[in-house]
Length: 134
Image 1 (cartoon, rainbow, N blue to C red):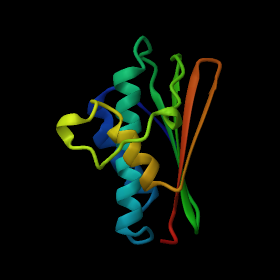
Image 2: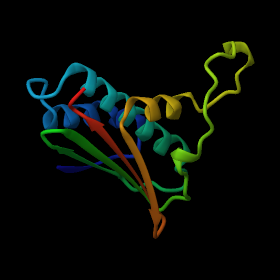
Image 3: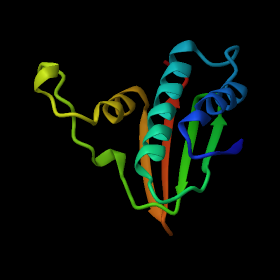
Image 4: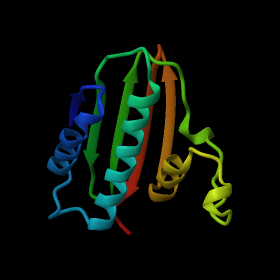
C-alpha cells in the first residue's frame, strides 16, 4: 500500500496509523513492529529535517509478506543522502565524548535486516526490510 504524507513532523501520527493498518498487531510481532516504527520515524524525520527546499509530500510504501515487511520512503526534489554511508557509532565511548548525530541511523541499521538506497531524478529512495521470522 502507498500513501503520501505532508513533509512535516506532525505527519508522524498519520504515518504510524498507516503502518498499523498495513501491519496489524494480530499478524506482526511486537518486536518487528517496534523496529519498523522506529526505523520509519527516524528516516521520515531525517527527510523532513534535512530534505530542505522541497515541500513535496513524502511517499511511503508498506508491503507485508509472510516472511518480511518492506517499507519504502521516497523524498522528491532533494539532494542525495545515503544513510548507509553514515559512520558507525562507537557505543563504548562515553556520551560526553561522542560527536552529535548519527545515532538514529545507527539504530536503524541494527534493527532492520536490510537497508537500501537509490537516488535518481532528484528522488531519494530508502528501503528497509524487516524479517518477521525472528
